[in-house]
Length: 189
Image (cartoon, rainbow, N blue to C red; front, side, top):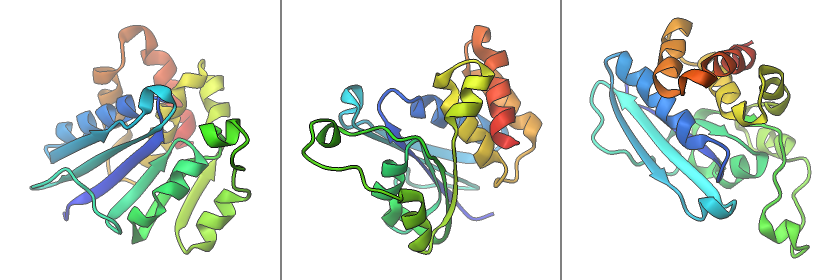
């Protein structure tokens, strides 16, 4: 197995750090070397958040360079577009189609780009774009979008579904386990 690179990108407060923690727990439970690096930026003010997750038999650095991400998991379309340059030529973007306006759009200083999912696909990238908010709400909370996205990512990775549930059980507080298991199941479906 070669080293694999996953970027988790979103806006502060969306749960990208929990998603990266659960992914890291899964990878460690599979006996892999894992490096995780989090860049918060202005995350508490709705700014961009990116987490690098690298795994394989031996991983030297946690940093993913431009053109090296095998997967980009995006909590919001604009964030997927912002990090597109990091995607490897044969990589995949798994993205929520939810729109979260950044401050320049909120203030009227800029417009939100239209047709972002189509533009991502027309760039040559493989894109799995879907509404992750609806299944999160069906599972019990709009805050479960992060786990819905992990469920969707799990379809593309070689790990058993039971291992993913074990990682969730390790990382999620007990009172939220059932909801998060359902969010994962809906994302995977």
